[in-house]
Structures are given as structure tokens and as C-alpha cells.
Image (cartoon, rainbow, N blue to C red; front, side, top):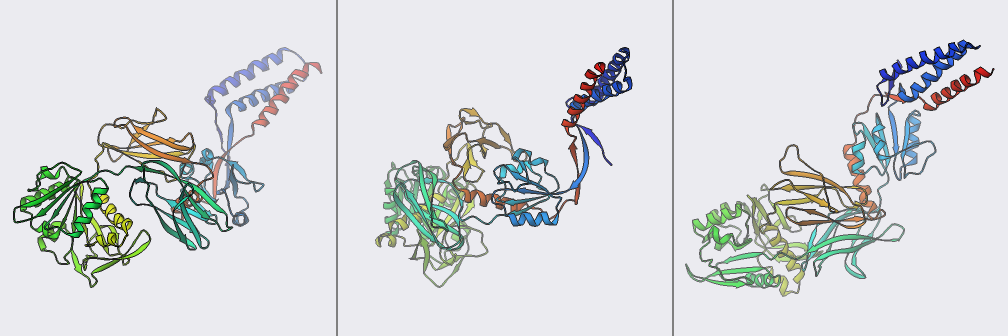
Length: 581
């Protein structure tokens, strides 16, 4: 059954009433003329008024058509398209504006994708995440294009000056390839990858804080060198307040003290002399009394480094103070040099150890395989801990358990100073910088902002972000304009916003209440295409439906407005010409 519906700005009843009055008035005028061809002239009046009314009402009729729709995106497979059309020649064929025309496809833009109904099959590279908001994904099928060679993922983060940093990502190659990280003409690091999807890590040591553009260069299958700009933000290393508790001086502690001093950390070192007497050293910090460990004393520190013997000799009051301070955010690192520590130490650390045969560990540091002495123990496989360093057999050599706002950490590596003695200072720094920065007390901010949209960011495309607030609603500004924010419907004090970068290069978001700035880089359109394509295809494959809509759907098809315009011109022309006949 064919149904007529109207898409008018005006109420159809009013249009019909006005049209009826117009027909009566103009018919009466034609009758008064007392000229020939009266029946034809009356019919022309009706046609003219009805045609003008239809132009105003914009009528459409419901039609039944195939529910199969094909949407072509960049680099679609022409054979796949022909196969789909061969199965159903009535399929509706659309393409995006940046896709070469196969000849019979209708062009559609992102904002009109909501017009596509039924079974939608996407071919090619797919759609960006923000475009999926415009399309019905309930019955969508995705036929991806051939996977592009290149970088498929990078996790941007804020790097730290004067320590070894790592750039981590994934790369898809069709054969052996090499990746090179450069700044200007200086090569910082390189790595070779094999065919397939590879994870890679490139290391570098920035000397100064600031915002920089490094170059990640690689070769494609044709031997062409592709160089893409990778933006990175480097901040100064935070000077931490660290307390080291030792039963007696050791070489490991001495080398650690020298390393922390070079990194400008504030260090308090307490060595036991007799039962209740201690020798205390202070580096980059004023003297404080640490003969007794209390909560007030521990509030001055970000991290406590100790060993099993020192932990065992703490009084119950000191252990309680340490436990309470960890719950409030303090970090604790215990060097485990005994595979069978006293039971109350294990209970305090909440870790379970089992013996292993080897008293050393092989691990990969800065892409070098090294063998370092380690306690002949392993954390129980049933215990869920967060690893910091693991050996080649995935045994956790350092890690932590979350306790309240703080972390209780451990390390099985007992003589890392041997790395410095053998000239491997970068590897030594990698071990300790990762452990210290992971476990140390985190700066508590009233507002924490994080970007939700994946790298890379593009001009005139949305960049979504989230602010977790411990205060009033955050006022976020971008280009000196307040960004509209909305709160999570379920979780309080979690706010979301969205911006569009207006220019390529560095852009800055600011939170007015605490004056913090958060930077992101908008890349050029031709950069990081492989990451963009990989992200799009993964998103579509995740939401692709396993069910289909009915074979046919009903849709509103507008009646051609040109037809009504021509009818109006013919009727009006006849009425003008009739008196002259």
C-alpha cells in the first residue's frame, strides 16, 4: 500500500484550507469572465493551485526497496563490490566524496549517513570513529581493504628529561623493514622488524624539557623512505623525597645513593649502628630526625626503600605508621634478598614467594640481553601483581600491589650496581628510574585531564577528552574559548568535552581553576595514514553485526518537485493565453 506523507514547514491542514479558498476564488473569477473554454480554464485553475500547494507541502510516498546498501570508502576492493552487486543487483550503492567514482554510485557525506538504512556493507578503509555517530551500526558488515604497511599504533605520553625514555608502538610489514628514530640529522635509535604485525621499542634520552618533533623513518615495500613527524613533550624530572632504611651499608645502597644524587632527588639514608642508634646521611635535603618512623615523618617522603632485615626490625608502631602512610599514597620498595623471608614480613608485604633454582635473571634492557644476580625466588603465579620488570621467562623481578592510594613494591634484583661496574649505566638507570617513578607518591591534582581520542589528531576533526575532578565543575578553555562540558550520567565528578583543532601543530587545553595546560599535536592530513586506517578498521570489525535486517525496507521517496513546478507553469500559461484564443 502506497502512503503519502508531507515534509512541510507548515501545517498541511492550513495549506489545504488556503488552497481550497484559492480554488473557489479563482474559479469564480474565471466564471465571471464569460469566455469560452470554461471547463478547461477551471481545470487549469485547480492544477495551478494544487501544484503550488504540493511545492509547499513537499510530499513523499513510501516505497519498498532492497535493504542492502553498499558504502564505498577509500581503497575499496572493486571485486568485492562487483560480487555484492552480483548477488543483489538492487543494492543501493553509495560512496564518500573522496572516493573515485565507480560510475553508478551516489555521493554521500558523513552527516548524511543516517539516511542509510537496512543491511549496510562498508568496503575499504572504513570510517573514523566520530563518523560512526551518524550511521546505524545495528546491521553493518565490514569488508576491509588490504592492511597498509606502516606504523599501526603509538601511545603518546609525557617523557622525562635526562633519563632513558621509550617510544613504544606496533608496525605492520610485508617483509624485513627497519625503523629509525631521529632528531634532525641525529639518529637516536633504530630497530629491525620482520613481516607481519610487530611490537617495537625505540629508546632516547632527551636532555632538556620542552615540546619537540622527532622523526620516525621507515621504508615501504617499494624501497621508498617514509619520514613522519612524531610530537613529544618532555618535562623536567620531578625531584622526589626518598628515605632509604638499611640495617648496614652495602655497595648496592652506595651506588643507588650516587645515582639518586645525580638525578637531583632528595635523599635521606639511615643505616643502623647499634640497637637504637643510627647513622643518617642527607643529600639535597635539610636534616630531619628519622630515628623513629612515624606518620608525621613519612608525610615528608614520596618513597621508602628498605630491605627484609630493616623491615623485620621495625617496631609494631613503626610498621603501623608505614602501613597507614602507604594507604595515604606513600610508595614502599622492599629489596628481597632472601627467598624465605620471615612470615610477618611476607604478611606485611602481602606477597607469596616460591623458591627457584637460579640465583640470577636474564632480562632485556634497552634491547640488550643481560644477566644480573637475583634472589632465587618467584612471586606465586596465583597472585595478581603489576609487573615493572620481568625476565625472559616472564618471572616478575620487580612489581607492586596497590594498597589504598599507595603501592607496596618489591625487587628481586639484589646487586644492580654490577651494571655500573661493567659500564652499563643506561641499563642501570632504566631499572631504577622505572621502579622509582612507578612506586613513588603521585602528585594529587584537583583536576586530571586525559585525551580519549587515539593518536593522531587531525585538523577539523573532534578530539575527545575527559576530566576527573575533585572539586567544582572544571572550566576548560581552548583558543581562549570555554569548552562545553557534560558530566557522566553514572559516575560523579567525571566530565567530558570535545574540541576541534583549528590549525596544524601544537594546540593547548587549559583548566582555569588550576592553570594547568595540556598539549596535543594536530598532524598533517598525509601523516600517520597507516595508524588511522588500522584504528578505523579495528573499530568497525568490533561493532560489525552478525545479523541482517529484513530483505526489504520501506522508505520515504520524495515526489519530484520539478514535476509540480512544470505543471504550475503549464496551467498558469494556459490561463494567461486562454483569453487570446
